[in-house]
Image (cartoon, rainbow, N blue to C red):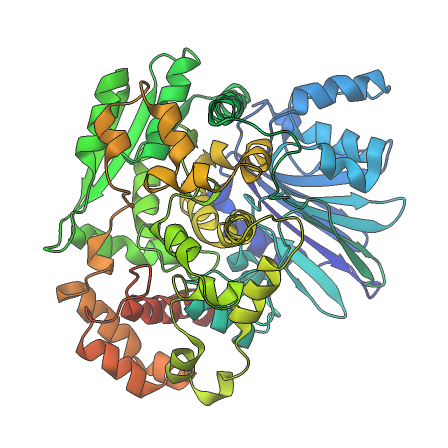
Length: 593
C-alpha cells in the first residue's frame, strides 16, 4: 500500500510544485520506501511507496508508459494481477516489471475505463491520459483504499488523506452541515461524497471519476451488490461449504500476493481466530500473530488475551502480546488523531494505532478480520432490527443504530447547523435501493457497502498505514461478499450471529472461542470516562478554540460533562467522547495548518 496525490489544472496554468511536496510530506508515513513525482503541463502526480510486490525500483511510481501516453499513481494491491498479466501478454502487451502496478497501466490501455471491472483487490488510483488529456480516478468496490479530493473552477487535487489536501492549501474548512449530521448520528460515518469539511470530498466506493481540462467531469458506479436468493435452492450444508471455499480462496490470495512476510492481527474474536485457522489450513508455518490489551475499568475488561492465547497455543503461532497502560494511551492519543483522515470516534482506533506500531517492527503486511460482522450478521442490533415490525425500514433501523435522533442532534449543535434529518434521508435511500429480498438483506447490504467503509475499514487503513503496515481484509473479498449477500438471513443471524462462520469454525478452533459472547476491541477508558481522560475532554470542550468555533450548544456540553458516564449511544459509544474527539481532530488537523 502507498500514498498517492495529484493535481489537474483547468485554467491553462501549471500545478504548484510546492503544494505537491507538501502533500507528499503528509503521505510519507504511508510509503517510506520511495517517493516520486511527475509533471506534464497541467498535470502533476505524486507517490509515496510501501514496497510489497516487486520490491525493485522498477516498480516505483509514478509509473509511465510512453507508448500509450499514460501515467499512473496507485495505492493498493491487485490480487488477480498474475492472471491479468497473462491475459494482457496474449493481447500483445509487454512488461518490464513483475508487480501489479504495471498491470493496471496495461489494463487501462487495453480496456479503458472498464478495466476496473476486471481488477480484484483493494485499490485507489489515478491515470493521466496524455493523448486524451483526461484524468481518470478509481476506487475499489468496497472502499478499502481511500481517495479524497478538492475541486474548484481552477483545479482538482486528490490524495490518500485529508491532511495532504489541507497542507496543499486553498481548502474551504467550514463545517459541512450534512457531514456534521452524519458524524453525530452514524457514529462518525460520513458517507461519500461528503466529509466533515465543505472543501473536501471523497470518491465513493465502486465508483470512477473522469475529468477533462475544462473541469467537466463524469462519474460511474461500476459495481452494485445484489442481496437476493439464488435461483437454485441450497441447503445449509451447501452454503457452509461454499462460504468455506470462498473464504479459503480469499485468505490464500492475500497470502500469496506478497513478496514479504504476512502476519495476523489476532483479537481473540471469532473472525481473526478463523483467519489463523484458515492460514494453518493453507500450510503456513511460523505464523506471526499479534494482540493488544488495555487496563480494565470496573464495568469492562480491557483485553481478551485468554481467547487470543488459546488460538495461538492451538496453532503454535509465534505470538506477540502487548499490554498498554491508560497513561500511555492518553499520551499517544494526539498522534492517533493526527493520522485520522477524518474524525473517528470508535474507541479501538487508538488501539489499532498502538498495535500497528508494534506489529510494523516484525512484518509489513497483516490479515485482519474486519468485515465479518457486517457481511455475516454478527452485531447484536441486527436481530433487534429484524424483530421490529412497526414503521418504515429507516425507522426499524434507526431505533437500534442512530447515536442521536434528530431532536437530540438539534440540541447538540448550534442553530446555524440545523437543517433536515440528513442521516435519515441517506439511510432511507440506501435501504430502498433495488435488488434486496428482505429488510435484513437491505441492512446488511448497506452495512457492507457503505457504513463499514467509513468506520472499521477506514479506521484500520488509517491506523495501520500510519506505521507503513498494510492490512488485508479477506472477509471483504468482493466475491465472498457477493456470495454471502445471497445467503438467507437466518443462516447469518442464528447462533447469536455469524452462524455460518461458527459452523465452519467448529473443529478448527477451540470451542471457547466459538461459543463466547460477541466481543469488541476494548478500550474502556474511552467508554467509561473519568480521571485523566475526563480532564482531557474537559480541557478540549472548554477550550477557547471550541467555544469560538461555535459548533456545540453549551448547555448540551455542560450536561454531558456533569455526568460523563451517563450518556451512551444505542451501540454503547460515549457521547462526551464523540464531542471531544471531533473538536480535538479539528484543532489538530485544521486549526494547525
